Image (cartoon, rainbow, N blue to C red; front, side):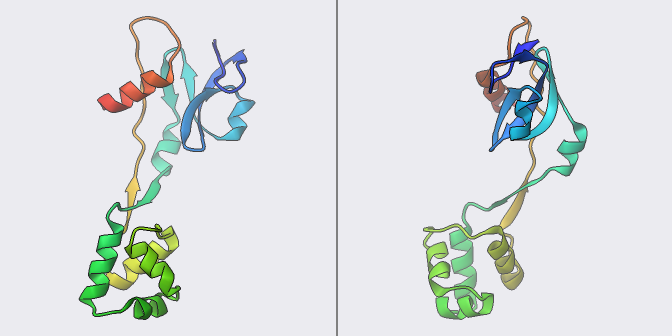
Length: 149
């Protein structure tokens, strides 16, 4: 048995995603996030169901250039595009100047309007950590393992 990363209690641990970070937590502390697997010694057994069903959507990195290019191709002013998308002109300007990232909802509207791809799916890889010696898994071990894969 190991200690919970959140409360320090020595008990059976679960792999938990808490606000984008992965920690080993007891069942009690697991309620603060989403339990994605069980930790057995130095190996993390992930729930296969969650890996298949879970997907993360992100806006592409060069969204500002793509949107500006498509708007200019169609000869639209910021004001025209804003009216067609039912948004404020200042929002369109800030997005094109990369002062603001569009919400997923607005990005989807723009994808449909322009016929482009602004949102992509990111899938988390299965994490399996093996050690020759028996010791606790640390955050550094997880980072090294993710970097190697």
